[in-house]
Image (cartoon, rainbow over all chains, first blue to last red; front, side):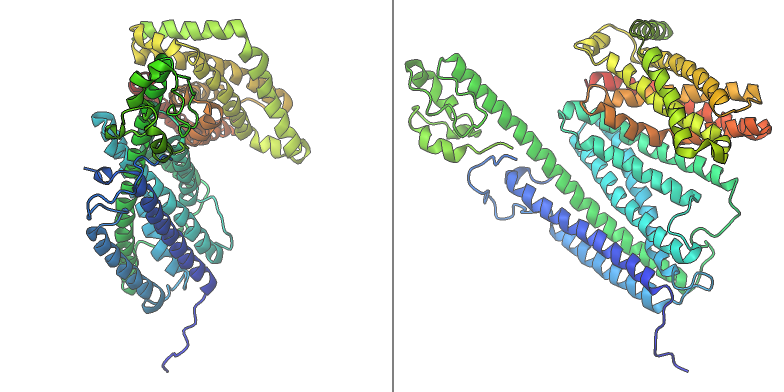
Length: 51
Length: 315
Length: 222
């Protein structure tokens, strides 16, 4: 009686939701990191971090 | 965007080249691990809900996203209040970071809520209290960020932005209270989101979701703050640069040199000073665009080779 | 502070009376909005009847935006801001005065729109006390919030697009409350509407206080 198949109802919605979350947050994170690098080049080293 | 110093800054070996730091890398690693755990628990190890079936798995993203949207809004409002009191740029940057994170998360909240709604109610959108006030919150955040983006003097922009930020949480509360009251008149009590009485594995999955979202949120906040700080610094330097340019032009004009009205500072007032008086008063200021004082050189001719390198196009 | 408010209110109203923009442009625009709704919603299908309260208040909000924009524009002329700052007038008073002036114009608009709705949508006014109270409270709310947000975007080139974007979401509770109150009145169950009127009054007080306090900071920040 071991269920070997994992049947999921509404699988599409769940996948879309979780996938979308990863894409949205991940994409935003990547964009942030790249923005950070680009801006860092424009600012002298001593002034890059908040103090 | 202006490149201030002609050579890429290589100064100290530990000068940060981005917004990362050892602390954030550790944090990032933890966050990723937590996300993996939440995904495992949420998608695989926990069972489906009795009523909602597998769509409950969306709740493990939706509810934490909603909660941290509010956290972001609170950060913005508190930081705005602090800016009004202290008037230091760090608070302004923090307010902006909080709002941007809140916007990203509110979009996620709406999307996952909508996806949950489709199999549950049969429709992607319904005017229930929670969704409606969340949508309005998204608009509030969009408006706030639009004001921030305006190309303004920091002196003019910061007070306006701070007041708007201060109003963010009160507005959100007013909106959500009135919408709830309004919709409660017409709607029978349905389970619009997660039944607060969940327990067992479902609760564990939700807690994992919260943990993951918390870590991700903090990581994003730190990075967004640092990016905001860099923007602030770059803007400041642009301003100093522009002031130096204008001063240089002013002096050159006063000294009687051919006023090369500098839209492109690359042309500079350097080559322009062939007339007598310019030689004497000109030089140091002719290299004005190279903002750092040590760069000024002796005669009018000498800066010419340096000028094209030292001066860059301002955006 | 109250004297300053009266001073500013009279100035704003005098400017408005002389230019007559409210009368000749905003008023007709308000009626036009009512007509647009009729075009869009087909008077024969009974939608206009049921939606009268909501359409009325949407029309008030849209025309109110114009009035608020003009109120903010008065102070954008050269040197007016500095003049206000250096005049020694209390910023809270300036705020209240401007809000009062806009409120007067809004009330006039609401009367006009009320007539418009009775004529064009065949509405039957009922529960007059509730209707009037709602109008007063909602007007105070819109004027207070609108003057504050108007100051937030005053002087900006993008004022005309930013003001609606910032103000209308903040006024959502006002729209909800005013519409519910009107519906209650028109349906003959005013008891249901008074709580909403209370909400509007609270909103008005909150925003008036907030505006009076914040106006100083906004005048300073140019």
